[in-house]
Length: 259
Image 1 (cartoon, rainbow, N blue to C red):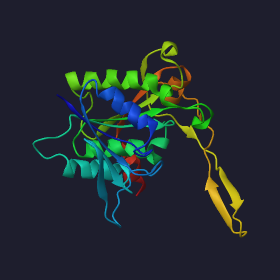
Image 2 (cartoon, helix red, strand yellow):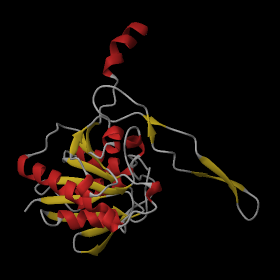
Image 3 (spheres, helix red, strand yellow):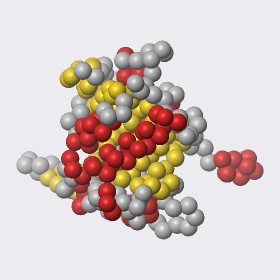
Image 4 (tube, rainbow, N blue to C red):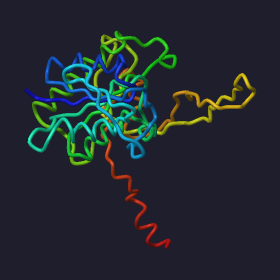
């Protein structure tokens, strides 16, 4: 039987994580290593300043005490697997909220997939786009995501991963019913329009503090290959190939002449 390693950045109790595990159990053996608490927007961070501890909650289901998604994958491959037994696929999610455009760089969900491909394991990051800042999402809201990830995972497990080294699939699911979904669309990462939403508050002692809010999900209109934002707005499931080489290759010659 094929073996899938699962993590997330919303924590081990996340409904999205449990929906993902429930979906994948029908096609593979599933091992879970997830953060103890929510680690949203932690990026590709690795814990170096204090020790981490696995806590086994049930057979094949672990939480990593105060770990990040990157920690979860790094240590799972070191502790739970060995050179002779590696997972066939690593999936990070199902995230509560979108991970599109430049948000990929913030995303702990994407970071779990990044660490996987750095370690040579094929990987998928999957996120459920929300309406109304995810206020109404529940276990039934992941039905389309569950159907979609099973289809994608089966294709990979049966026929191999379509991408080369240090590349992963970033999947975003529109906030609609399965009957309204138009199918899959291969996309490029769009250009997010960011605001600066930081609310100012005062504690009971009058000390000022700030709380970073959620900006409106807005993006720049572009021409050419459809973006992840556009695909979601048109009721498609977005699949974006992401690679970890951040070099701006087109600017190398320019800089050689500039320097």
